[in-house]
Length: 377
Image 1 (tube, one colour):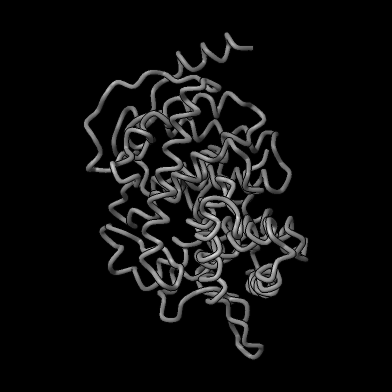
Image 2: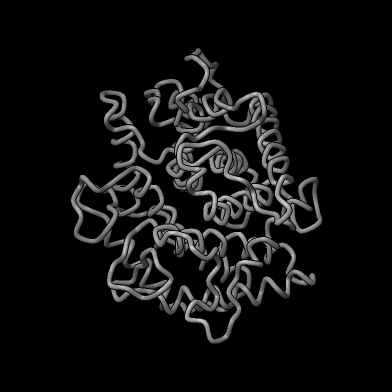
């Protein structure tokens, strides 16, 4: 078993700059030794990097009295500061929990509790509100509403799963039940969702995928979820696949609207629905590798949303029944990921800020620990 895996790692084509999401201000290119999965030095390096990233998140979170995590430096972060903390704080809470922290437990147990309390404070519990169950800040642009709600619901579900019988657990259940009901009643006729927290004719894959993962997490945590809603959503995601195996943004889109990120996210959604193998999965994984290899030839194929892409790539590859996908990708992605971490413990993203990039990379680094229920194989 060892020799074929070793040959795969040594002979696989290297990933490009776009694959590995180097920030513009990253250190100069350098040769990195191949670190094989299972190597103790690899595990130590990943763990150290993870701990530094979590430490940076906690230090920045401590700057806020309300428990939210500031977005940090980034081209859009100042403009987005009034709404981005919902999604960023949810990602940060997930990063803490993915490393084994829970409400009041672990070195970042207090950070988890403060982040979860912040998200709970944004849950609309008014019985007469048309947004009852929605988790978000007032005045936020419509384009971020349901995506942020999905990430917040996912974080609350993971927190509830680890601490259901605490005083905070009772609040979590109430917020989760309301959140799930909002997702259920806003599903569109095609089976997908769009940006606003209401039922509309528009639909798109990235929001739908985020909400399916949130529903799965809530159901796994013991919250009642309408199975027909999930069935319609998974069917919708499946119909986003085009002939070349890729997944597109919306039904009816052509190949120019497909991406590695969407395809990897769709694969992780099909896994969540229990579909781990078959022609649909295989053609999608083939499409991912085909597009990653294209980046060797031309920079025009670089990832548009590199950190988002990385989060779903690690899930699509790690949870695959064919372990070689993950071994091939991680042997090249992880050394560069470690090299791109700055001296403070953070990673940078020019678009959405350091907290976003750092939370996602911490999630990627903790994937193999399988402590977060949604990461378990």
